[in-house]
Image 1: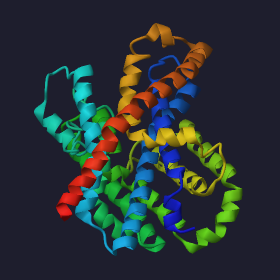
Image 2 (image 1 turned 120 degrees about the horizontal axis):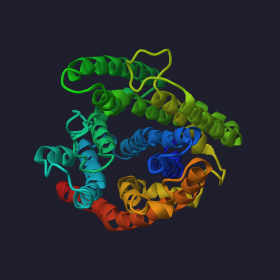
Image 3 (image 1 turned 180 degrees about the vertical axis):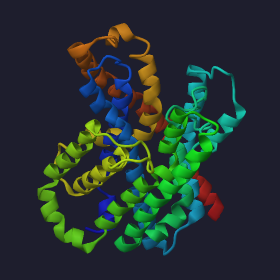
Length: 381
């Protein structure tokens, strides 16, 4: 299976669809404060859907880079940044304006925070991420967009380190070491200014701690491009569903494990997000060859296509549905009633999120992409 063939498969959309459903599940669980602990732990594990997004991003960016190199013989760095900006910024800026109206900052407009978020530079300090209790989040969940853009900034260098599994393995080890050193160094400085919770959350979110996740996504790209994988494809395809289920079991098992929040904290086991990311790597490989309609289907792929909008808007859907109509959604239910209410609310929230996201995908994301393409044509003229 060539990289060109892999890039045409629908599994990437489905992976994004699963990722955003995990994130929605996590945030919906917080609306049901009395969910029994085992169910709550499983639901909030959807927090790690962001890592699945990061891995899918690394994989698809490398596939696009590979196609461009095959077509032109080089990578156009300017075109890369223009495409990424126009892919992300239009709907992100629309979300910033909407959330300013929906949930205006209690302390008034913070120009520094606003500019940092709009420039996607909000991933580098607790005050502008923000992980401080008094901070203003210009777009809920915007930390991951800042981390994603920080990854884009290093991507033109990143691609030259993932040309072989040997170089990749060195990069993976280096990324883990750098994460530990950077986290410990930042902790020693930040604890003099902020409380432990603020610092711990920031160190979990920022790029040095998350960078190994992108590296794992690159590992999947390399395995898919190996001739050996092509020879193994029939076997993996035959076992793709059990492999995907095994990866899911490993992922959900981390709900009940301990472990530190970020790399560098003393612990005999790795952080949950690292274990989850290794499980996601197996899941990605299984998804790349499976023909199972349980795993690859139109509904999940459709959610994946609008997943960026869905990530941005699901916070508003939660606020305007279960958040505003708690009695209707039985958000105060307890025990089995809370589980039933959560299960019933889930499809309502997902469908509402998809509906809003489909509109903004068509009305903002797609025109933004075309605007970027037109801008590149003018640059080349």
